[in-house]
Length: 343
Image 1 (spheres, helix red, strand yellow):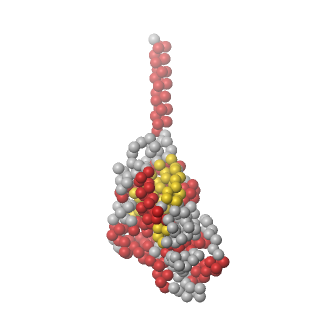
Image 2 (cartoon, one colour):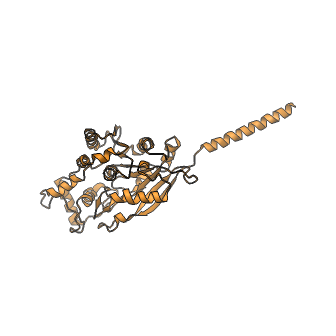
Image 3 (cartoon, rainbow, N blue to C red):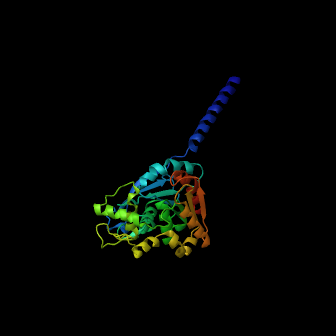
C-alpha cells in the first residue's frame, strides 16, 4: 500500500511538473513580426527630383497578430534627416526586439509603421512641393489607406497615432496640423527646424557647391539647405535643382524666398492651426537637455500654452539621439496606449 501511495505521489509530482512547465512555456509570448514592404504613392509621382514613388515601409505586427482576429491601433513613426528608415528600425529603435519587450511587459500592443522618407538630398521634411512630391498626402492618405486595406487595423482617427524624431518630429507636427482628421494623438520627439532661417554665409557655401555640381551625400547633413529649399522654395523653372535660395549670388537677401522658409516653420504656423491642435485627444513633445534643439522646442511648448493647446512636454537628460529608442518604448508607446482606442 505504501508503495502504491509513493507511486501515486510521484505521478502527481510528474503531472504537476509537466503542467507547470506547460504554463511557463505558454507564458512566453511569441515574438512579433517585422515586415518590409513596398508601397506605391500616387502623391509622389512625377516629382522633379526623381525620388522613387514606391517607398520602403517597415511594419511591425505584435505577438498574436497572425493567429488572431483582433484589430489593433496603429502608431506611425517618421524617421530623422540624412538617414533611411532602416537606420531607426535596426539601430535606434531596435525593432522587433525592443517592441516585443515593451508589449510583453504590459504595454497594450499596436501595429507600428515606419515609412522611408529619404530623398535625393537626404530627406523630404515630410513637406509638399513639385520638386520632391507631396509627402504630406503620402503619409496621411496613401500610406494610411494602404495599411488599413492590408492589415487588421482600427481604421479610424481614434485608432491612429503619429510620432517621429528630429525631422520626423517636425513632420509629426506639420502633418498633424494639416490632417487632424486622420490621427487621434501626436508625439513629437526632439523636433527639428521649428524656426529655420539659413544665413547668408551658409547659402554662399551652397552656391559654390552648386556651381561645382552637387553630389548627394547619403547619411550626411551637408545637403540640409538643398533639402529644405527643395521642400519649401520649389521653382520648376530653375533647373537643374529646381529651387530658389533666400540670398542671391551677391549675398543680398531675397525676402520673398526667406519668407517661404518662415512660412514652413511650426513656430510661425502654429497660431493658424489652433482648432486642429485642440482637436487631438493628446499631444506630447520631448527633447534632451543637451540637445541644441531644446530652446526651440521649449518655445513651441510655451506657444502652445499661450494658445490654450493642452499638451505634455518633457526635457529629459540626454542628447539629440542617445535615448530615442528607450524613450520610444518607455514613453511613446505607453502614451499611445493611453490615448488611442483599443477596439
